[in-house]
Amino acid sequence: MITLVELKNGRYGIIQRIEGGHGLKKRLEVMNIREGKKIIKKCSAPLHGPLVIEIEGCKMAIGRGMAKKVWVEEI
Image 1 (cartoon, rainbow, N blue to C red):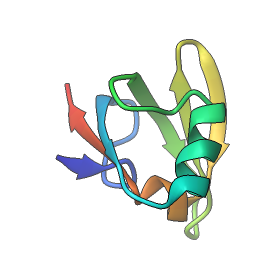
Image 2: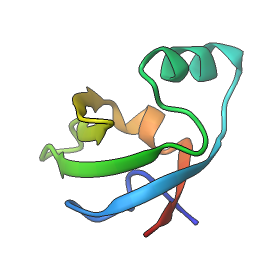
Image 3: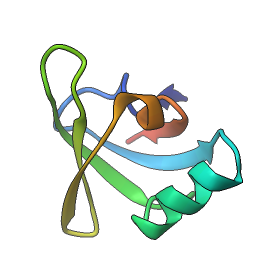
Image 4: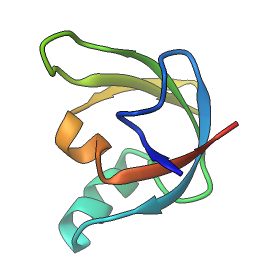
């Protein structure tokens, strides 16, 4: 398993684990980021900026701090 930050741009992954407290998990859940979901990493902004991801056709940006706590299995 690798973190979402380590997933290469344009690659797919299945979310396996989310590390963090209740607040982080709740915030990610509201964005539909939860275990078992298929995720695509579209791109990452330069200079340690946010990542652009897509889940079920919905694109969004998340910070690297959050992305480091989302573990995926690359497919």
